[in-house]
Figure 1 (cartoon, rainbow, N blue to C red):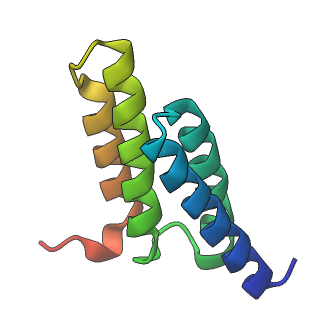
Figure 2: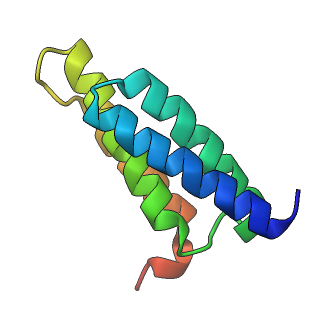
Length: 95
């Protein structure tokens, strides 16, 4: 698969994940975003700043999935995903 094809597939998966979130299909959204993230990391590298959009979508899907399971409470899973996102983007950190 060419780099352009990979980018197009990742974008399609992200759109589908966004739609799944809007439909409260969070488990499906998490699956779609994980695949998009894997494609983007393979083509751009794990520390690429453009991953922030995909990681943000992943956090949104995880937060929604978690909040449904805990009846409106958002436990540490969402904040854990945020920490993970931060660790994957060292280029964006400032000292």
